[in-house]
Length: 463
Image (tube, rainbow, N blue to C red; front, top):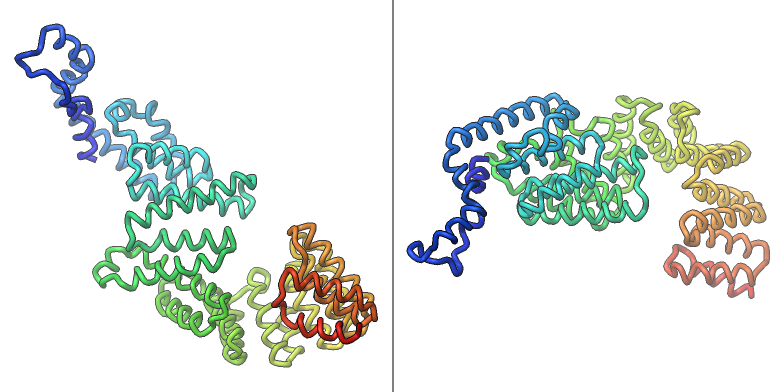
């Protein structure tokens, strides 16, 4: 702060020495010209010792007010105090100290979800101080937070706006990381940008790994001085485990999650429900069904079936994988019927089929397909497989075609599962040329689709 004020006193034009006459060569006219440009300003500064001190005191007073308001999350009052700087503190703004006021106002505006205003203020600050870590990190976080708000439908962003906002966040996360390469928070947040906003988990994983590595490389003293980053470290471990599981690395995921559980003991960054659910999911994917059920039981004891339906849905799936549909039904039935989201209904349908209630399974899956605007194809594909198992190939074909049409309309691409089961149903119906055509289309899109080449062999042998 004092350094900024000192820079203001040194008028930029005074540093220019090129082609300046020596004092003895100056004419009275040239002196008057200089005085006209800057003399009044510099003379005023020279006379303003008391005024300079008053600026320091005013800035100190405002910063203390801001600190107290931030502690109470009183963001509207911060904005009222500081924004716009030229009106709320004209003398400080004239002295070149508006950057602090604008950055604090931008931070508060972000918390009020006034993202466009916050971003504009951060960008204005960065014009003067492009290499300021705090400003780059603040702008990146504000852009990132606005994308989360759009994802949660709290604000609207058109596709072009969303694209620009993503690019803005990435650019300034990268700038903040370059300025402080041993940080944690900005690697974690950019990882979340890739994972949760862009669904690019393969790009998120190295960022979570860097966040983890940076924290673990700190000395005990450094960790003590950066306690806020401990939570970002724990969150990075949790998200890293999720990415590793998606990348089919369950043993690494288990190692990351165990670290997360250990580090979060007594801290509570994540609830026990979330942590033991994640542990159960890792064990399930690793094929350790008993350990998965133990972890999920711990999560279920602490969970609320109406709010934490994902715990009971996974518990049901593990019981189903263990060959116990009765216990699977007991688990899924704990979720109130009105609170069962589509993916819970899918598992419910699978369980009913295993229990021998095909009509019940069909009813549940049709209900799920009717209510799911983005994932309707998933329920339809479960119906297709159900009908195929019951030798109802026309019905299987109809569901597969519906799933493919829905997916093409919604995602502008063919539904791979739909094409596979369409080909399989046509094959069983003896419509071999049509089956070959569907299989060939799938081969063009994804030649390594599981079991496709074997199905194509069956079709070819029947030709």
